[in-house]
Length: 351
Image 1: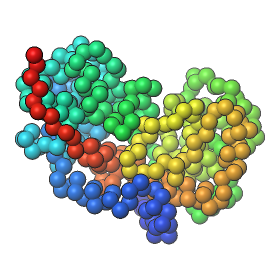
Image 2 (image 1 turned 180 degrees about the vertical axis):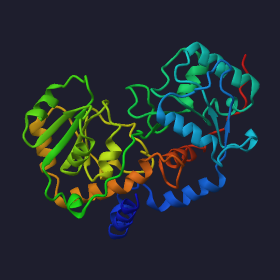
Image 3 (image 1 turned 90 degrees about the vertical axis):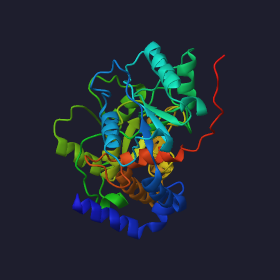
Image 4 (image 1 turned 60 degrees about the vertical axis):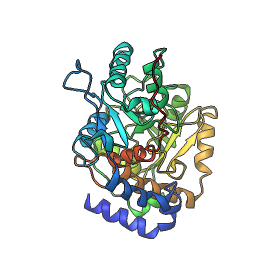
């Protein structure tokens, strides 16, 4: 970890221009706003539904975010001092039970009706589905949804909702100068698929190409897998499949290539970082020839910038056992802080 930190600091020193004007969307406002958040942001947490089991959340990202929030200085016991209100409920909650819970919040607290739920947020691993019930409609339409990346199509509202960075246990590999420069690599691209995943025509084409390597989980030798990260210029991901190892690949100096047939609007930390500066997005229609043409067409200077930005960004995408400055937990909270400004409507009286 120490060697990786030294490498990261050297990157930030050498490539100040790249990491301040390219990696971040708003570098001039990010860190002052972040410090304001640390000093000012307050969140009030409602009690979970009465029938909730002790285990509220089942995915590691959700559980870690919730536990970190409970032990953070952002909480307030006085809802009148809160910027945002957190609604904790299990992702498995039925639509009927969820509607009942929101209705009880509306009746017993004065805060929901001020914004019709726009200053509230909730965790849902795959997102809340649409409903005809007024309470769930307001929750889905107005409240900030925090789901796991990637979120199923249609269940994520861009510019309102947030996704949690994937959580994957790994040890950081310090990229060497050769890794950053793409020197002495063995493969153009490396792809890892989960066991039982049915390969598409494109994946079969990639498997048959000598410049790419495709492996299925479980990979027998972890060290062998890590060496393939380091020995590949690019790591390939099919959007919607297993992307939990994306941060690990970036930390190893392997540039992520996301293969998708539509624009992606639910990438983690989209309010903070510019993903086009640390990842490549390729369509599926061109086949392996189109994929190779795009990757071969990336100039050396851009490739180096992609590697450097990706390594630097991992500090914001990693979940630490104990939250640290600018890590995944804090950057998710920062995105909530950016959403704290909402219009407070006059109290709506039900007819």
